[in-house]
Length: 449
Image: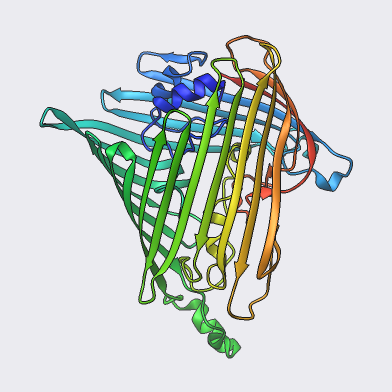
């Protein structure tokens, strides 16, 4: 997070496989690995001494609305997102992330306080010198933080725990990863990606393991149900394999075109496509900034990893999610057993400084999507309504930031928004919603340590 200039510098010195979107003006959070790199790009951080690096983002916030039912879980909150990295050797580090929070002061004094720890053992080691260039190997486990595979056709900015192993030589890179839970409580996600030309082109193979839901025939009698539920042969594992190709091209310094095409490898192959264009213009440090983007997504019926309709869920549900787009593969893949889906999304963010310490800002996302089916499957989808059919949604955030300390990002913000993270009582509880569409006026104070 932090100032725009610091964000752009951090993007150039990003941690290995950061998984975050660089082409946006929305703030980016710290990643739980290679902390020293991120702190070096943001000199206002506390930093560290020798082998120890520390940093933290602290925020408090409140919501105001005319109807109490419009308040979300984080309507009077604090979040301390703290990080520490200990480099125990030249190429080995232990990274620790501790998120301490209370989503609702309404519950009573610290009644809802929570702590979410995350630890990653990280290795970056120059294994051997080949033709004058080092072959560098990478390893991170178990906290992978936010993960994006390819350009986000199947998985984009999704928190995962598991392991990731990679290698890089010149402009060629390789990464394979395993995540123990992606979209469902019973799934495992494996992905291997090879990129060329410094990441401009790539190929990914994905295996998505899920457990099938048993047929109603298995519930023919109470006795059969009991036998099935107590049997160790509970259901069967379904392996969905995908092959995707992806690429990106930057034209000048302001325009980027990117995309990903994928096929589910099966007797009857299913296809998907993501195409995106971004225009990002900056007028120098402390000046105005504008991002305009467009993305198209198409998912063919049967592409998803499950044979049956099972609602996905996500965790942890923390406020940093509000700095990502609503348009995400999470919203599509669960519906592919019934529907062909395609969508158009227009994204925009703007920052307009009035003075050195006052900035007007706005963020918007217009999402138009269509669900179609040759069969008579009728569902009522959250934030969409009756499917099959078409729907349009607008998500926005607009307000003012006050930055009393010039060249430092600590700030107070007042804004109106209808894009808020959804969460149950506990942030770690899996929730079928990524966002709650509720219109509120919000006040936030953020400090970056």
